[in-house]
Length: 581
Image (cartoon, rainbow, N blue to C red; front, top):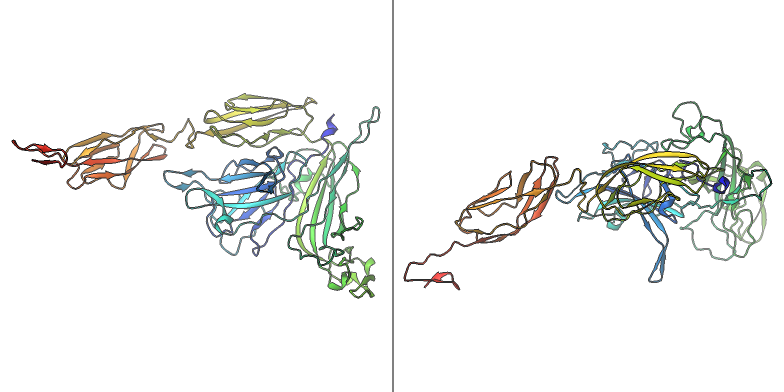
């Protein structure tokens, strides 16, 4: 039944990530779904990677295709153990510029930004013609209820050999490996069936303690961990219309005073503060160990989102228990900064075991914003299809990708149009797999009907290149001449070079120059008479460029022999010394 698909991420509502400042190793503005990122590596970059730990490629849906890099590629790295070291499952969304092996140039560049960094509104860096060192990406809108264990970001730079590597491998600045925001997994319970009554699911989300990798080693097993605040903002929406991916969280583009993702409906919003702090080893799990969301029913056509914002705890030293390090100011006042008025006289114990009263209401206990998570629940996720399918290459296996999601399984998936040979979309699960066998530009439709009879059709256009990066309907030229004829000093030389593929007419060049006496014409003819002193072997690089300005190069070996020796009778030629005797 449909309600078995009760838990889905609200279409196009992503997990939110921390804002950064210029003092950190990365500068990002916005959300995982829509964000600007500053190229703070100090050098030009030619790509960008987003790495999700704990996700399969089939868990990722929407990817941004309007950047200077076009469609990204997905790579799934399975969990493994090498030399006793375990590495987790990862999926990488990789945006890269094409590299021209003939000209040794990248087709797209994210220029190094200059300080001070520009401060964006999370969607200002969408112009692919801009050179201001800022890019915009939309990613990580998941097609399942799984959350990543961590997310990391990496600029890709040229390693000097025409290969893109992460900037940190060359010692340049790069975004940190992960933003430490708690990962929470909702718990969903399907109520027992009641005759003639359709019961919605019961959803419960638990937020764990904020991880603190830089937290000092605790001196005693009874020590409490570093406290953090969680502000829980709950929003209920009854309008289940789909939301466009380009709409930013909480942005009001149409000016009606309501965030666009609310579908024009005033939302019911509730917010509360909770203090989370790791409790001593052996303690019973108390209220500060985690925020345990109350279970609630999610009705059909109703969407509930919970945004979990995280802030530092900044209570003074006197607000901590001197023996256990427990934070005692555990309620926030109406100003969202100081302690609650109800905590005007909190009993605190110092390190000597003495008690005193502390006034939390005058203490600024809420500090800097750290980051946020957002999760959404809906009783029945709508049947949807991903926005784009990755481009591919002949012989290179596609990573598994969920083309459709939501609705009620099983699906009935068919395609029509020009579908790439070698690729398959599972007609029941909607997962794309396969290895392309031919190159070209393919335009096709994916038609899906779910178990409830709901149908959608999505059109796609993808490019499949050959091993050289060419597409059959507009390939790069290839020099078909296999070898250069040998030349002889003083003898006339003539050779017409040939090329296949590409679009005629062709133009030809050679570097370095041919031996003295020989020349290469623009039409591809090597002619002339090798001069005295040119005997030997050279390795010229010949480049052909077609009408579409697509070049290709090939290195040849050219041998020039010495002029033959003519002996006057009765002398004869000594082959061993090439002299007359």
